[in-house]
Image (cartoon, rainbow over all chains, first blue to last red; front, side, top):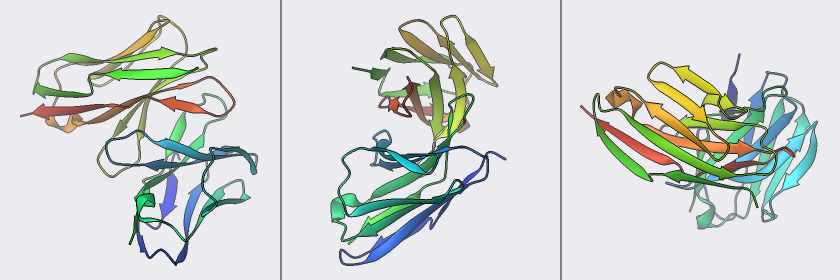
Length: 112
Length: 109
């Protein structure tokens, strides 16, 4: 099974709302990623968790808060977002042997 | 600094018209070059991994090759369903991937 799941598929939120994105994989991968992708641009790295510890934070604003409750699950908590945060948010996990990444389908986020 | 450049930015082909996409890279200590296909509004789909110069991988109408400075994705006799954005990425360790800006391919029937 090479599937990464993400929920919800779509999310519309106001600038004062608090919401969370969820990502899950059951491939036993120990590294999990959050990316942000704008239209016609490549994925932009936000966070990397390795063995459930935050390894990389690409200077992401504090209104984005990642969490890795266990090796299969990754959350991204959202609070007080801006309209420019509207994008496709992608989760990925990295295979331990081949280093390839497997991506989820993404969450399309719209901030009003 | 690690860098990846893809060309062309966009490509329109007639069905059956073969072509190649280019991915040029500079990286210290390549531990993998990856090709992905991305359909609009969806997550990238893994296609190939290449590790060393001279390596080649094939899947249906796609063939990926690698030299010390670049990789090519050859598309033979493409069909409209091959229309997508093709992303190249390099990995040099420490969990960080460097993505190219992608090539948007449109295959016309």
